[in-house]
Length: 473
Image 1 (tube, rainbow, N blue to C red):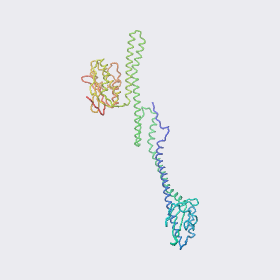
Image 2 (cartoon, helix red, strand yellow):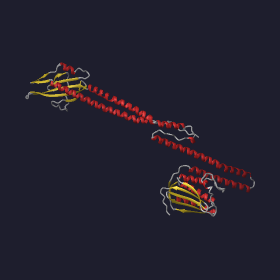
Image 3 (cartoon, rainbow, N blue to C red):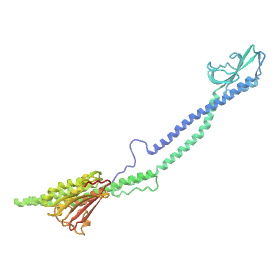
Image 4 (tube, rainbow, N blue to C red):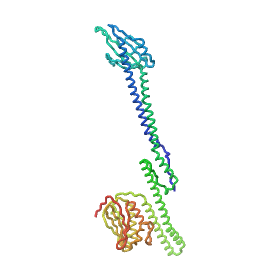
């Protein structure tokens, strides 16, 4: 028998590696984009600040070149200075001198004033945005008072610069800031990819080991060895090893059950066939009746054997422990067997606590008690006594069935719980009853023992663990 362990998942969904890359690299991309947006805003702010400082300096310098003389103005603005201002066509700079404000005197264009909601301070530069010939520009405005006290006048000086220079400065700052950051993100992404690939190597080794077991028999499945791997992979390997161990154990129990059933059923079935053939050949009614009686006895033995084998197989699975009053259970089982005990002349009684709780499976413990009482009633003999006891013993509960029959020799006691072992030729048994009792006790985390009773007889004890046992005398 072989087991097929899939080495890949053909369903929908991302692989673990892609999920890790997505969850680790996507936040980096988001942070890079957010950082780029913040850097752009900072670069734009600093570029605007640099332009404002340049415009403020330019408008003050130009205002110093306009000198009031009496009620007139002397404008000392040579052609060379004008050429310097206008020499960069991409960095368009315009200026205008007007007096009163808005009445053009000097400059290279008609520059708009500030909006009505802006208050123009005196001797302080006002900075604002405006559009000239449909193009956005940053403007600086400075107004000065001149003239006599009787006839005051006001002078306005404006300097405008195209925002193209702001965009250029912003682009240069962004490039200088984001280029190293982009390089850092790329290096970090490469390190993350390499780290994930290296971290997933134990999983690939685990997959390879499972793949190697694809064609192995279940009984030959060896545990997975992960000596050098993270703790999480060790836990995964341990879980897989537990699964493999459960599979091996299940297969072993299945094979053992099949071998036991085949071995034990062969003889009674052969006997049934033989007796049936002889019955078919008989002519006399009395002889035919005797043959059929033997067939019936053989059929009953076979049915009992099948029941015991099925009980043994059923007991080899994990049990579901629930709070159980084992004293009440023992008295109920004793009452069920009282008619048979009375019929065979055996005194069947109960001694011990009225109520005693322990974690157990009521169906399995009832099966164990049935086997113990059946064994005692079968082999003790007429006129004997069979006693069932349930007593607390510290952190354990003692469930005991004692009889004062012939008992067993010292040499036979160690073999009592072996499968298909029988110490007597009394018909009706198959050597599985006490083996089933030991199996049930083991499933409850306890221990089954057999002792010789004094002066004669047999005591079978089941020591069952209990957390909180409360006894009522």
